[in-house]
Amino acid sequence: MKRLKHITNQCGAAAVEFAVLLPLLVTLVFGSIEFGLVCYNKQVITNAGREGARMAITGGGDVVQTVLDYCNRRAIDPPQVKHKLIDLTSADGRYALQAADITVTGPDGQDDFSVTVRYTYNFLFAQLIGIRQTTIASRTVMRNEPN
Image (cartoon, rainbow, N blue to C red):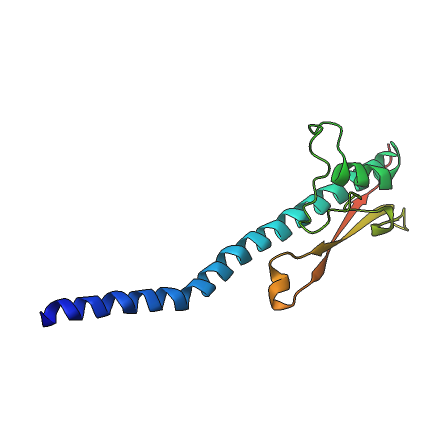
């Protein structure tokens, strides 16, 4: 009889340990998701800056519009995809990236064009611990090669 009572007490201890560790596990899972979203957005603005710099050195069009098209509304995307940048808290319908977030300089003395893209990412899960937003930036420099 004593042996069964001992086993029952161990089951309760496992439940208490799980209750203590659950917040840590949930924080790790949602923190990993949030970190992945930030890394994805960094990659999107890096690629957009690269596309804009390429447009600048070829002289083929509007650099700012190229960056905006890449991030916000690419023609090759299906219609249900509104923009490539992921911001889980922006449900107001406006595009995630604005023209004011893009800086184009060049050509400078060495014929370099520079495209800087800044994006303010609003955290969803990290707001629980007081982190509201962060600015992700990417700078691409390409040399204008003469023909």
